[in-house]
Image (cartoon, rainbow, N blue to C red; front, top):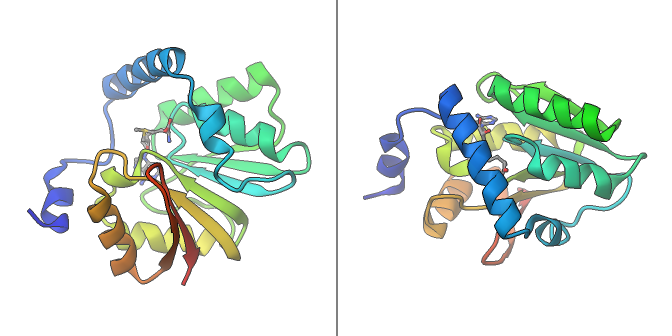
Length: 187
Ligand SMILES: C[S@@+](CC[C@H](N)C(=O)[O-])C[C@H]1O[C@@H](n2cnc3c(N)ncnc32)[C@H](O)[C@@H]1O
């Protein structure tokens, strides 16, 4: 089956409330049993003072780490199309006093992040649900600085599908590939 058909087979990008809550419980169990995120984010090229976009932030597992890495002089936009994700991130902001995090509820592929704001955009475990990848990748490029970076992973799709979508879009060139993620630069 080609990439287009595989992508179209998924019914919707949007999870039900039950789906989101179940995912959150699963994440909590996974993070407890396999605490890998702190180590993983050290390979994303994030430094103090940077502006990061956590695109498809979900309950904010990565957002909190990005917040810590960029520090007070930096900023993190936490973007999601699901209200429950934004609610969860807002709770984390309050609980942990994260003053450098701005949660934004996106509509479709409009993140509302200003043009060329981000040093690093991270799209972790979410690209595989995107039904119109070229449109989506265009929005990611719009919000990324000209010398910025996109860190993206496969989630539940083969590497071949991730790469084909990125290259077909014409918006990004792949600059580094590891088992864990791809790093891309604006083309
Ligand atoms: C599997 S979760 C991963 C969450 C987080 N990145 C993590 O790894 O913990 C995927 C998230 O992407 C969000 N999402 C799906 N389509 C989106 C879109 N077009 N724009 C922004 N977020 C989206 C979903 O609502 C969900 O919260």
